[in-house]
Structure formats: structure tokens, C-alpha cells
Length: 194
Image (cartoon, rainbow, N blue to C red; front, top):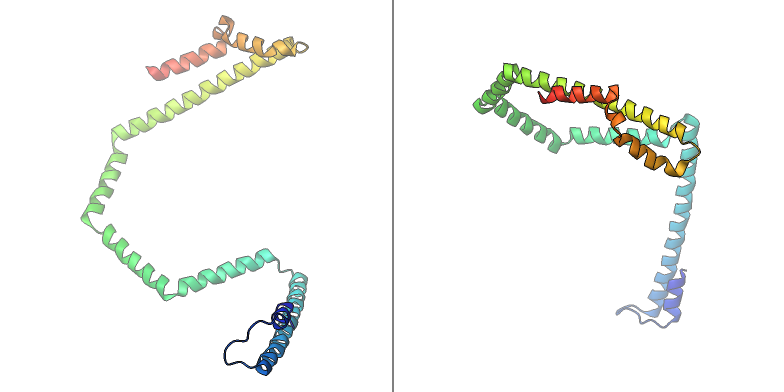
């Protein structure tokens, strides 16, 4: 018998109306048996699950494979359901209606016309060129800065507290601005503005 039921029986809990003391005792005994059977079934189920897991492991079936199979089966079930089939058919009908409508055909033709125009091609070429020039310029500037920082680190290796100040100072120095890399960067940036 479960401890909660024993406490209720000995605690003098009132019986439900229409139930005698003998009937209540019979029900308590039956409940105890059913709870024992449930516990036994749980133990058997647990043992069967362990056994199935061992078999799967020996067969090389991993939990991930099981999940994949379950998802695949679930998706197949969804695709074969009436709701999915009807929705797919309706969406197909709408798509057919839209793609054959005058508005869609006109908009599609307009986009094609725009992409074939000289103005579009020139704009596309200008953006492509600007992107390449900017990329090259930033790469040159990055290399110059890295080189300068490397030089400054080598010069001041033993004097690290001043390194931050010297690097900052070296970046703002006129010698940096007159370096070939920096001039190349300015030239490339200037050609974009023109």
C-alpha cells in the first residue's frame, strides 16, 4: 500500500458518501495491487528499453541516425497528409494565377529591361571598380601600418610603457604621410572621387 493511502486510512479521513468501511478497505487493497503492477511494468519496460539500446548499439544504430529516421518519416507523413496536399495544390494555383497575370509579366519585363540597360551596366561596373580600388587601398594601408608598428616594436622592445605613445605618434608623423604606401592610398582614393 502507498504511504499516502496508509496515512489517509489511519488519519481518520472521512469516507466518501455511500462507501462503507469494508468497501474502502477492498479498494485500498486493489489500489495497492494496481500500483505494484504499474511499478513492475515500469521495471520491465526499463529492462526492455536497455535491451533494445544494446541491440541498436551492436547494429551500429546511433541516436543521431534514429533522430534522422524519425524526422524523415515525420516529414513523409506530413507530405502525405490531406492538409499538406490541399495547401500545396492551392499554393500552386495561386502561383499559376500570379505568374500569368499582366502585372507580373509587366514587372518581370521591366526588371529584365533595367538589367540590360547601359546605365545599369555602367553603374555596376563603377561599383565593381570602386570596390576593387578600395580593397587595394585598404590592403596597402594595412600593410604600411603593420610594417610601421613592427618597426616601432623593434625599436622600443625594452621600453614597452612608451610603445603605445610612440606608435600613436608615429602614425600621425608627416613621414608616415609621405611614405609610398600612404601616397598610393591617397592616389587611389583620389581617383574614386573624380
